[in-house]
Image (cartoon, rainbow, N blue to C red; front, side):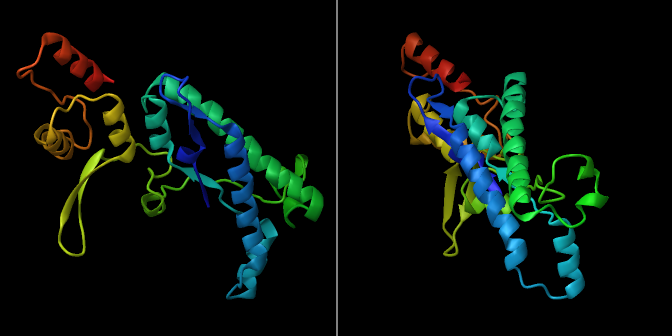
Length: 231
């Protein structure tokens, strides 16, 4: 079960990026995902008694997340920057605390996992689950949710999909589409196709080193387009 970090971002025109983080949504979604996964242990139909015994003796679950890259895109934080690392460190600290608190709270009501006294947790607060979190790549899950997978960067900002009918469709990352509207630098459909082709081929999934040409426009307009491309 994975919390979609892109969905904890809300529009806020007072911010330079146009977005801000809502930590209340992060807390709510983390608690909800925790409850779903922990309850699934008791609702599950196990194929063998030994599997049920093993699962219930530790109650290991895996609250994860996805959409980190798209969240950073929306906030206009460069994935590999120090600013982004500090921001993500603080955000995931909140995520870790909230998921642990959910396990502590449930242990108070229903007791810790049966092997608690044998675990390294035994010197601390009673905990419902031996393991609470996991970091999965969520490639397919992220695709279905139309966001980026796990904690990984987006592998390509543009790609071509082929439908079952054989039709090829050029697609941009949806957040990139939004930023292209906010910071326009492509003048027409021809430039847009060239931009898409560059990302897929020479850019290896990235728009870095893409260049625009000045044609029949003032120096000021060309400078603004260059600034928007840089953003």
